[in-house]
Image (cartoon, rainbow, N blue to C red; front, top):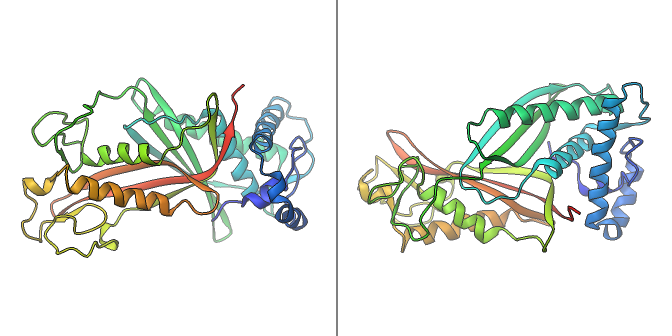
Length: 326
């Protein structure tokens, strides 16, 4: 289910010490005042207020929070607070996605009171901590956390996706030979097995092209994060003749198409094929920057079996806020 829109979120206001309900008149008010409330520091103050209030409630179980918060609002603020606290904008090339799904239990009117909200916030933090702890890297970092809730036969479900990066990956040559398509098969001339492939190289280049550095001494905080998967290249034909060379906008080669899965198909040429896929993958990223949504991160994975080789793209976008850590 789509997360709470910013129009409604900004109507919650600055005072999250008392958990305001998200009522229709607040949404209507936000719709008319959105242009006047969209300052980044105002949103960051709301996120910090939410975070500190949850912390205070957990530390003082008898504290009365007053009011309630709808599920969509709760998911928005929990995600925003976690990314504000733990998310690091790092161009790490090694990425691991960890995912969990569990039921949540709002009240009958679809809201959480303060105690329930603080407990859910802690449950999500614990889940992200488990994701982080399960990754074996020494210098690992949390890139982003994406929360999505859904309703299935009146049951509320919350998915937690944590993107974890390796901040100290193996060195990659700046001027590389041709890379094999994926599975970290390394360079076509040998070497870098288990470290690098064409999908990862494209991921690095596309991220560099799409990423906007924040102003000096500032960082970005993302809200309303959403993941978009492009996992079936057959949906994106290029119009070229089917010969396992740039047949689709996303890399795909088939064992049933001549010249089949041979070495020259496995190796993606630097002068023709890599630029072709680079521009296509950038186009996929840019197509998701709708309204105030901005690119945040991408993961490109090369996968294979006995009948085909392909790339699978995952792209995250969100609403971006400028943060002054001081």
